[in-house]
Image (tube, rainbow, N blue to C red):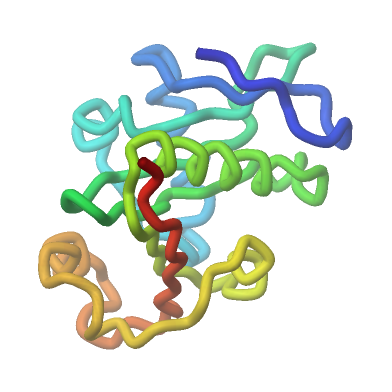
Length: 167
């Protein structure tokens, strides 16, 4: 399913990721992992979770310039994770488009809440996310946290958004 880019700030489209996008997603995430801004994810894990990802693709070059995953954690909860935009394409609304798509997908699955762990809380606040205590999130999410080099001294901000179920 293709989603047209939201505001015309960028020449691109948002679509579901395919197997052919995994290496580009990996390379993009590595940029931010090396900066300590995202948890590195091995290629094998990205192949396992490719269906969770949406990508932003530049119309001219057809290259992946952004990615975002919505990972369902439980019957009423999902996480927005691995949101990254190529540094050369930032400040064009791509991250916002990817976040909107993830939230639309969460609503389509009739999830109650979406959370994220982030270094950019201001970005997520514009979508109605609120800061929350990490300890209030389900223990299931900690499985990934123990793999993080910063564990147990996480310095990310936990945020949550209540969507409410639609009948």
